[in-house]
Length: 550
Image 1 (tube, rainbow, N blue to C red):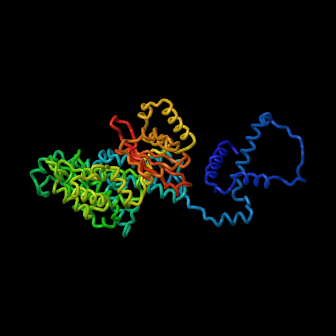
Image 2 (cartoon, rainbow, N blue to C red; image 1 turned 30 degrees about the horizontal axis):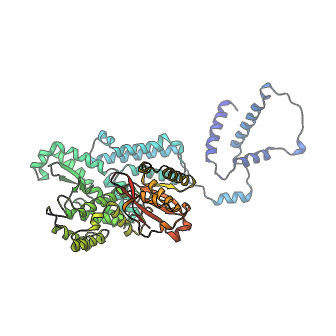
Image 3 (cartoon, rainbow, N blue to C red; image 1 turned 60 degrees about the vertical axis):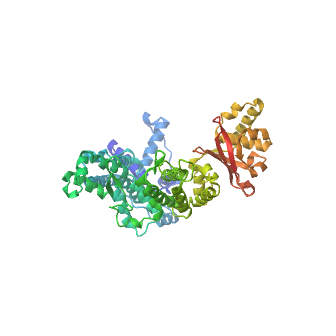
């Protein structure tokens, strides 16, 4: 065998080895080869042989033997005899179909470029405009990742390659193509609907901006001409392309024309849109309307705003993935908008300039209390309405915060604060090191009696110090960590005599900082799952505890 043949066989060996079934142990294979090649003992004859110098070094000898054995593997795959029982076990497991990665890369690239050209025509853009879109760049990067940069990671398994192809083409997506996925189903589940939404959001915002920018040179034409047939052909082409992506031509308060997609109930909404699960519509509503507040006032009318909030409420109550970024955006919009509506804004005040309750505000509260605007804030509205009618003042309204609205939302979901959205919390394990740190802070504070020490602490440290002071029975330290009007009540927290009862501390740093004190499982039957401790600023701007809830 010459050197060239040897190199070819070694290259083939590498490919063959890569394709070996995982259950074929290479050690066993080599052992079997040696056993089959070894002649019977009685035929072994020892005779001294003269070796050339190049075989005298053990390392070279071993490497050479290994090479011969490896070449032997190439020559013997069709004659290696497996035991019958092993052979039957292997044959019972059908081997997955294999394809060549090079062929797959070539085919997927052709399909990708073809689909990309179809999208270019669909959007009516030039090649340069198409390749400038971020969603196209992301798709190109995904293709490159699997077909160039990391081609060596590809499996030859057909199912794996099919899944990889789906990942690539899911990035090459327009709003129209995303919603056309609905046609595959009769009625979609929430998860299936959320998947469609996730594909839809990949490109819709960028295309809205793109088509809106194309309108700028035609502003004067659009202002003068209402009949679309009278518009210039190139402007009509822009509008038609945007309409195909469910976008409506609109004009803002400053007279600027723009496109906004509304696939749910807009002019160009597809007739199959109602096959989506109704709980998903809140996500589309937020995508269309954006933030419902503009500065400190409502962006839309009060009726339009509460209608949107009602749609979003359904999605917030139904979606189990409350830690996702999309959910958090809607939730924060929901909380801040309801807070503004109930506190009153400049355009929709709760009180008149003379300090009397606004009649329109009372009518709004009554509708809210009747359930016309959803369920989450209904009970809160009832309490505010009763207090205003009885006392002319509402303590519930005065104490209302985004945190209280969040708490109400969680109660409707039958969830517990601090457990639903762990991604909102900075979690600290109550391990030995943490306990030692708490004790060290306590000892430093009690030794120096210096309020500057606790003034530097974050909410989670304030709470940890309070817990330790409660356990050791130091009322003085507890009082120093409380606001004067703090609501403690008959909390079972005062009964706990060891830090071992607690498993975690979680800090939520929102408008209303809170700390969730998690209880170790073995103690939950006695003390509950956790304590919620609200923290606020005192008059000097330092954190202090304002309420403890079991």
